[in-house]
Length: 346
Image 1: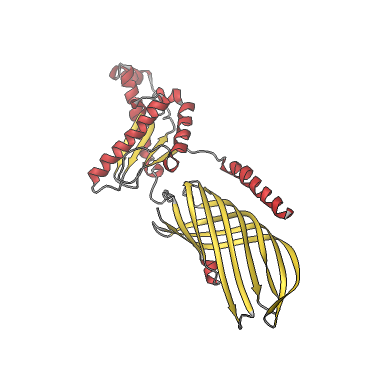
Image 2: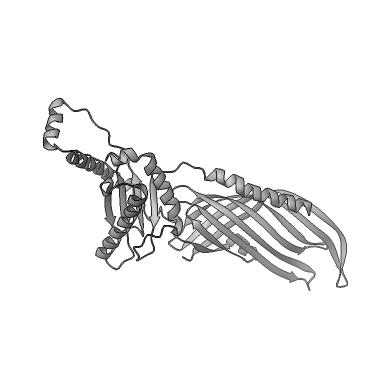
């Protein structure tokens, strides 16, 4: 019992210490705000929008002077593909982009002129906001400078020219920076899971995963089986429950690291001597999710860690189970493996 208490303490410490360190990755300059299909209301706490908004507000605050000066515009792209026609999709994308801009204008104290907006009837139901690298100014002659000033004698005119130059530079990178259908693969909350390796050895396995946001998920898998043969002289029975916390990484959020806890009981009698007991342990997991289509993924995963097994030995004599002692074993190494079919529900 003391070993189990010690292990649980180490497991909780691992989750609270290791994962905040993993999560401290360098942020990019693109923020994605998700919308309910066919709706244009901007729900800030929904699907990680609050996290993205806080990240974007920090970017704006760090570059506010440059943004207000017109040298670093915010590129806003609205997307919608859930309406019935292209015109309706464009209209909804425009409203969504305006909702996000209004939130930024109010919170960050910036102006409409600090945005460059485009709307699209493709890709998905989201709005992206990007910060582009400031356009480098090239050297000009005195005559060219005088000509520009003559053509744009006002401050507003010069700002309009700078905005146009920034928009031109952004358009050159549109294909590279616009999120595509393959990039946004985590637009779901709940999925069902079945470890095909477990099913292959006649041990039914089912689970669920809740994606709190694109980067974080909580999964729970359970296995159960009960087989007997040779007039019940041979036995194979098992149940396990394995909760897991995952952190998804990369642009497509396909690779992940996790922390798993496992507990269960077993009863094996594959020879003259049977073993019956319980197990407890956990460790670090890693894996990759391969997208098959919009609804299905294949999850390849492996777990390494520690298992503590307490069991008693027994024999069956004249249909009576006779105890032959007990043992405790510790195992360090692989504790889990899976090729899991993931069905994304919503």
